[in-house]
Amino acid sequence: MERRLSAASRRSAPSAIQQLSHLAQRVGAVNLAEGFPDFPAPPHVKAAASAAIAADLNQYSPHNPTGKVFSKEELLIISRACEKMDCFAITDEVYEYITYDENKHISLASLPGMQERTIITSSLSKTYSVTDSAPAPFQEAALTALTSTPDFYSSLKKDYVVRRDFILKLLDDFGLRISFKPQGSVFVFAELPRSWQLSDIIRMFAFCKGDETLMTAALRMRKLADGTGRKSGLLAVADKKIRLPLPLHDVVLLE
Image (cartoon, rainbow, N blue to C red; front, side, top):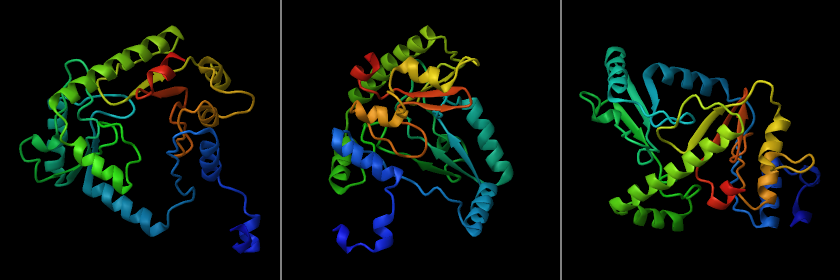
């Protein structure tokens, strides 16, 4: 196959996404690497995006990465703003079934006057643990998932509460500050001590060996290949703050 490529193509080095895909194949990891272009969008695309911002309001509840669940009073403020500005609201309700304690998800579209102004986006990926489920066979399975009984959603919440509380205690034991206990979603957002460096984070989680990145270390341990951007699916770090996902397998949490 390589002989059929042009000379220029044969000289091209594998991309980061290709390297992750090959590494995932070698170690038998689940490969969710997708890859997105790392170059600026054309000016006319940026202009269209700017115009769209003025015409709609984006709202996430439960929120990623903080896990904030908006109350009815807060949603009413948003709905009144939409009416005042005569704009649409685009809501991301992917975590509607993943709320904790006494918190309940309220759809913005359920408020007076908002059904005509709300565009709801969602996904099967979080509720039914089927990320990267675009292939046709998975879509057939998704239809079955949509017929799940209420017991499934109750069990889902209980499972995530256990994971949330486990990670909260773990981070607290390591001295990380949790300014907001997640009310929903599948993430925990914590603040690192100001004196910590990235190397401290790596040692704390004991993921990496030598000059490995968090992503390649996760692959080596046959956890997950997540190539969607520059952040690891296991651990996203920015500005002394850390986001940890809750869907990790129990074995990974214990490690």
